Image (cartoon, rainbow, N blue to C red; front, side):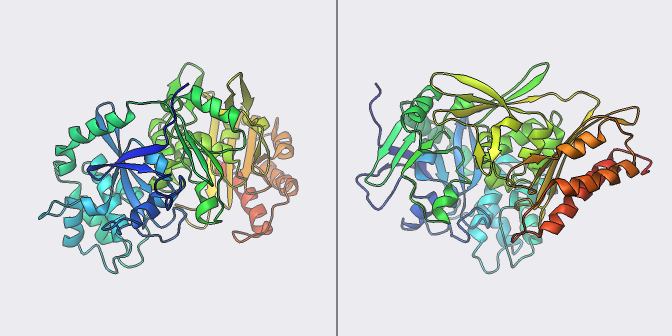
Length: 483
């Protein structure tokens, strides 16, 4: 039996930090990185604007050793619990500059008047720093994507974008590059020990395994523990609803769950793969999923959120679930004693309800390679293009043969208490000519299949109209005649 570890270690800027939660009762295992930093002297650059990952005022950068090089990621510190950064470097705005010289991203913000009221500026600067470390002379689309998660009500963004363009045209020779080997050595020393963290305080138990085998044992022993991968959803229970999470199983550090494998018939994706990494891997392989991920949250959110976590949330307005229905995805579930594979349609059982047993974890998502004559489409309708939850989303699969519908899947989010297929509409369309007249008839059937709710995002009438129009959009994009 491995000895218990109840302290965490990470590098804050360039110094090793050890946190013992039992010796520091003011800290909890679920203390966010944001609140931890705000408790320290001279680390007030991070701000709490929303506490839900929408505004970016709390943006920081984490660095990890990836094959002998540091990999830099921008994240929302309001959504990250302290043990999640064990074995990583945490970089804040206070550490970017040398004593007498600003970092290039800071200097260009000055040069282009990129700051006005200043409240959002530290978060913006950290997003630019993450961009600087990952891209040289990036396209404007890349710059805009890196800033999607940072709200600024003063500048209109154009000066910030100009600052990014000029800063990222520089050669990356900042102090972080110079000291990279020293940081890697510190991180390697922390990560040398791989037995789990078990942090137990009077109010909480926090478990962080580093192998799948250990994770499954914890899952079996603590079946009611809240499971977190990126915590972009679960953290809101604390930051917005002020819940105390009594038991947490943090599987974010399990490298075995972070992979992408392709064979002749299927893509196999580890449940721990973050959505930004997945987005970069599937540009040509799964273009409809790539399209959806481009408007999924922000870069800060995608750097945290995991594929498995998004599926496990079973949100009826989640962006990806309808598309996974269209792809005929399968979910691999594992326990300490068994494993099974469940089709996505059988996996989702109801409102935020799945078929996961209380000793199981999602370990893999299998997506069969679509046939060459099958079109997969994804659609998302929301109040704003980026960083917004769907009002209605659709994942559609269409196979035509001689302009006749051979097979079709119409899956919707936001139209019921769970992601749901329009099975009556599908049945009506199969075997019929793919014409506007037929599709308009199908739209009326579609309207009768769902009884959506009216809420703060939309009325039921509007949702019904959107769903019908998305079917018409599918038709218009798959025919040249329009008849």
